[in-house]
Amino acid sequence: MDSPRAPSRRTILIGASVLGAAAFAGGAVVVNRRRAAEAAATATPAPGVDPMLLVRNYSPSFGPADAPVTLVEFFDPSCEACRAYHPVVQEIRRQFPTQVRVVLRYAAFHDGSEEAVRILEAARMQDMFEPVLNALLEQQPGWAVDGSPEMDVAWEIAGAAGLDVDKAETDQFFPGITSILNQDAADIEAVGIRQTPTFFLDGKRLENFNADSLIADVRFAVENS
Image (cartoon, rainbow, N blue to C red; front, side, top):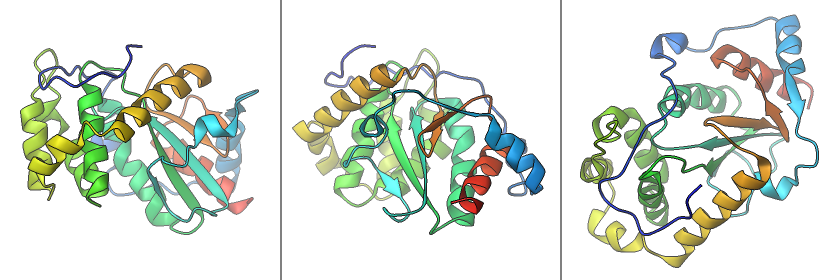
């Protein structure tokens, strides 16, 4: 993976396949306890993974810091699959507001994704992280154009979501943001992250998941926490 660098406004490639909004239309699917147990059984431990590699004190997170269950998502803002799983993660937050902490880690695999991360981190400095995250993912097809990224459009979307773009364009080069990019890049290499989204539930990497099984895994973890 390339080391983080000063972003160029015109470089983004999108990866992964589209899961389709229909997979999650109408809300989460209710699964019985047996299916939840079977889904949880598919979660395989990640031997030797230092918990510090999964959650850093600077990592964006939602939910109580002392929640009994922690879901970590390694994601790329320009990844189509991450966009498709975004409403699934939001549903998990809705169903388990106090039982689950969701932590986001950046895996800026695609050309130009670092700039999108810088937009998000500049938004976090303005307490606008979630509105800008939602807007960038919801309107991702408008800016993360395959072979012809439109980062100016991404900035416009962030501005429409409430970001002070003039300030953010300066803040994006704050050394702390570069440090976050560097540390997350080192951690994804150490953990062996090769695709996005990759989820860890209470330290265990989830394999062969889908929208239903992800919710089932989390429900099982909450019920047995």
